[in-house]
Length: 185
Image 1: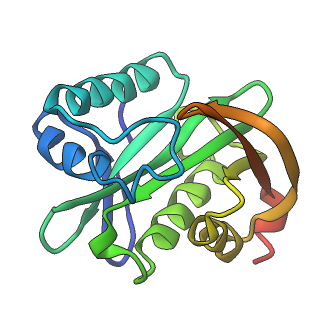
Image 2: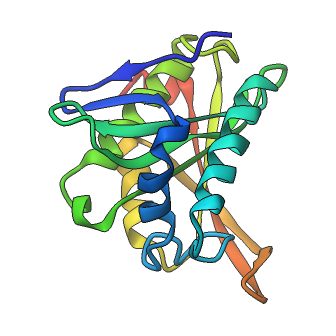
Image 3: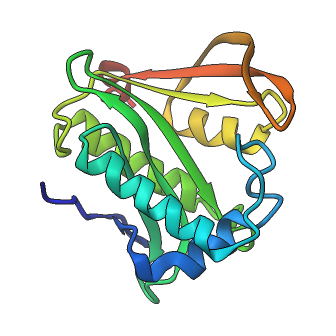
């Protein structure tokens, strides 16, 4: 199965590779990046290597996809984005993304998410054409909510104590985007 490479004006979304381990470690060892994640900040390079392998396996199993977000000009890995899971039969997917803090606030995440959502709704991905994409946020994560709203996601409700990590329960705000709504944006 061919890994799709996608581009925007400023970004290249491509496969995470073994040689990206140090950049992935830099990303996931940053406490501010994983503040709302269901994992602790990385402390060893092997954790980044394992995560890259995990994402590759998800793709090979046709269960999801995760891209490296790279600056077109330098090829620097600045984050990741993708579908943590997808269900071709149900034509839906669950979205995830992260970005190095030094690149926050300039629209890179929104740009990357727009591109992968377009690819999913246009049937450009191995999962086929999707109809619905879901994104979940922790209620305090205003930056993530902002990205979802800019792309056209609608808040659908709060799932109380829907997640458990870092020794506590978390409420999750559910956002959804339907292909017919996105095409109207």
